[in-house]
Image (cartoon, rainbow, N blue to C red; front, side, top):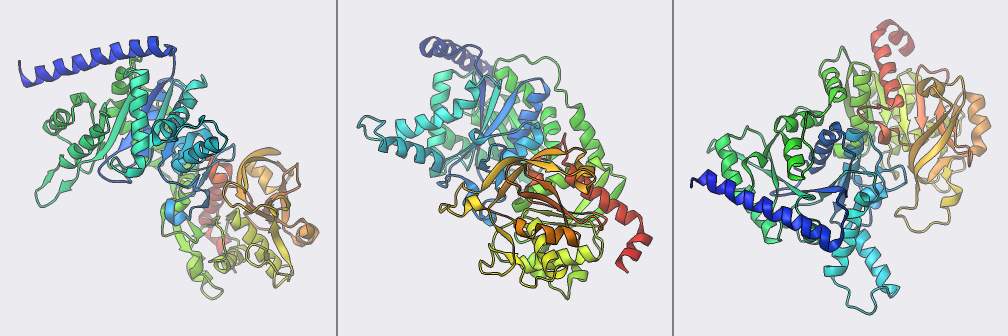
Length: 578
């Protein structure tokens, strides 16, 4: 028998074993035959390979075939959630509809699938241990010694299978954070091993994302790091079903066969994942590698036809063939790390496509802007966004930037803290309250135009206690906000402790800043605007968290459109600046 024949015979035996194991599992554990299928995504060799983008891309392909898909992320850090993490540590904190502070990868999941996630879609080691320890304190374990196995792994397992048991999804994709070999990730890998043993291999699939480095001196791709990564995974009892290889150069068929042989996978289960121009190209490239067909075949699901990605392809076509271009500044305090504002950058891409426009986002550190150099930093821009954040660092720079764009009629959008700084700037420079400020930065200021929400004043713990998740907003007719949204009632996601101080409402509206959006339950100001300005809007919520490929957010669409109009009319622009 040839080497290829031996390999095929071996995999046939493996497939037979898995089928028998699946039947045995259904009989022994009484699992329903029509239960959800589970896909686990692990990473090897190095971090930051793009497991989240891969998981979202695979989900998009399966969704395009009519399957109901969701994605969840299990993070190995001890924090209960990323809500108290500095953006420099972990990028942006993504907030779901139900108020969960989660990993930024959930943003990718929602932007790709156009399906909202929830608290159940992001689990950390800290949350798992917190739950188990609380149960132990309650006496739930009947005096037993609480251990990683079975108590921690059982709780991980319960959460991993939870979404698949709701009946809402056909396939649940689970991204395991970190890199195989990390001590923090071991309980998760062990749990996946147990799930495969219980549910059978026809119901569970492991995709291992790895790196194939290119050595310029040798002018060749090296497979040894991947082999060692797979060996590490196998040492924990897990055999990858599909090997996804990140690479800067195409993999030859010989190299794929080598990887398949030494990593113990089918030859057609070695998937090339090349570096792409944009993350939105990834689903189509993986489709060329027949990833979706291989996954469905291994999960014993129908494989007929191709995934319907017509809308996705139309988006990509427009993305790559814009008819105009604008430059919009992003003033923030974490600009050194692009992931700190990930959802904002992606929202500009979505809004740009909606306007057939390429949006060049120019990042400007708020600490660099003062009253003397604002024109130097901002004068050439077509629009400006002042980003959210916390703390006093860089605050004056944001206020100076807002003053410049307000006085020079440059389109402006302020998000959360950006909106609050717009309120402070107006208070200081229009109303004449020279000490106008937020009690977050100056608790003793005389004119606290931004103050802590009443329900927040008695809260001591910082984690998960802000105003979080979706809240209603009623928009006044005839306003810029109504023109943008086209309706009176909207729902947006929040993450804040401070609000517009309604004691100053009459002063602001009399002087020309309008509160055009109000929460109907507590009268919280959600949107402010300046009717006399071409396009000046501040929002207390986070619109970037709801922008997706299929549904770009109207606020970003409006800002891009206003920036295009400013650029198209240089005469009016000069008159406004004069």
